[in-house]
Length: 193
Image (cartoon, rainbow, N blue to C red; front, top):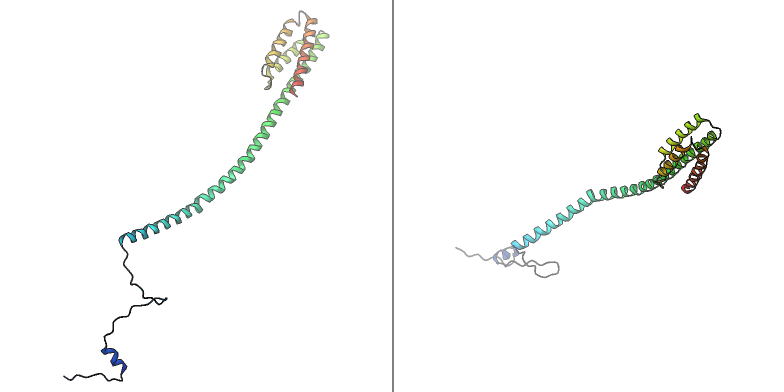
């Protein structure tokens, strides 16, 4: 066989005849790049752990945005409403105390009025009216409630029972006791203010 030599002037033929070693690829800085190494099992595990950690952070963010923020807003609204209601409750307590004091004063004025009418009936010796006003006084004293002075209604009741026992036999002493009874009620009314 004939051994043909490539023509000296044909560059394509010259390239084919030469066995050229592969050049190493260069990176942007002009240095020869190292071939990529395969990841080891440990590197893969760290990569997976990193991805799991990122997924966990993303989940925590979603939970915070979806659950915590609305709940925190509801809590703030509830606390505001609670403060408003506590103010209303304190106002109610003050009004309730004022009502009880006014109600107690009204009851004492009713007792005072019936005591005065009893004195007039006693002075005029009207037995029907005396019995009527004694009954009214007994009912009024029985229904009297004084939160500030819980033992006073009992004391007034015993004082009234003493007057009731002597009113028919000793009318003058009953008149004196009724005056004392009235003074005690007036002092009590003053103390309630």
